[in-house]
Image (cartoon, rainbow over all chains, first blue to last red; front, side, top):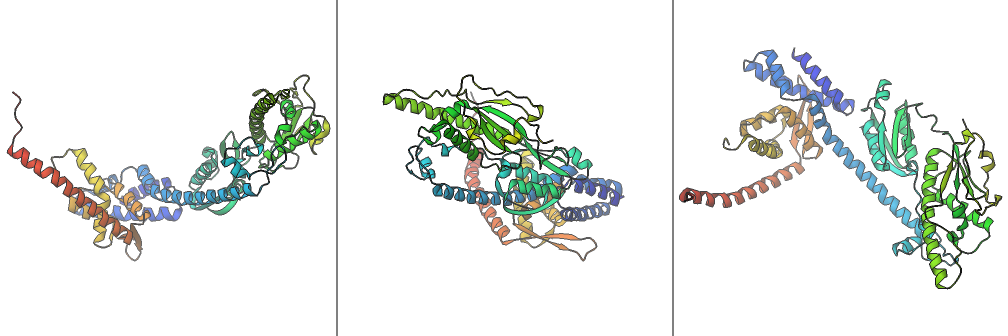
Length: 383
Length: 124
């Protein structure tokens, strides 16, 4: 009787414990020892055996609650260790970033060397487009992690914390395919891209695949996401004639239009620099329209980049107008805040998509084209 | 103790559990069940197994106690002992406790005399 009752309780408890098999076995062993001692004491005192079993078990309370209470201290310790690792990484990254800023050459619009950027920023000096911080693809972040027999569920949660993403794991499907949330993961990685860590994790989870959608890290059964390695590329067009008109503000001077187009392209390209461009992906400017062939996620990033750029240029154009007014020059800047970026477009596979060009807007001409453009525009995306 | 209401009594007991466990182990190594019995004998109250083990594991994780397994008995048994950090924690807790007790006494004892000698006047 006692054996069966105790084992049933301990099995239930062990199943709920989000720990490694060895840790679970040890906890079950300790509790079994207690239950047997207590049972012996109660029956020695004359209690009926069945009643004693129930009484002994009752003192342990609900198995789920106990499992949680027993797991908590270990998880707390692990979180503490992980936090230390993450902070150390963050500190190292800051040092590297500072060094980078100091080493980067910076120029004023007039071409004169200026303060290193970090210093310029610290002084709140101005309008240098270099100040503009491109959104970082979370998968490109450099992280360090150390997991030791950590339940995979916690690993995902921790990565979500580190990457600033919500996490959704489709446990229903995964468990049906033999991946339990408590599958222990051991992984020790220093300074790797988050993508690498997730790839390795996906491999250790075998049937697992992941994707990031709208700030949510989604983990699901392999094959759920069409193809992560070769996601569907979409061609989208962005009416940026307004930006183009003022591209000279990026680097100063009154460069001819083709040159300004190249500058803008260069700038957008470098602002997106966190994103590695892969085969089939391209960016180009045609007749005042930015044409980009990229994955939907990266298009979203691009929109953010362009919006930031638009705001920055609008501010700068306003300042420039003031300055010219002050020195009695004509107002040559027609930038209107909030009206420039109009994404138009559409997956190339549909073959549709308008250019949404403002009538009469200046055209950039073909001079700003980058390679790869011709292959992407108007053709169906890879399928 | 019977003058305190049930909740206050439990809170007081719960608040003292860490120190009680450390005190039991200051005497030498013990296993879960024996710790429970010692505390029951000393305090007249039972710490439920469902509370005792999470508490022991927490103290272990915090490095205040250390566990060893005894394998050569009928059932494997996990023994706990105080670590130097646990001893230090215990001494600190006892000092705090004594200081608090002294402050309570300095407040409570004179007040008790006052209540005994001068019963509260009845409103007229």
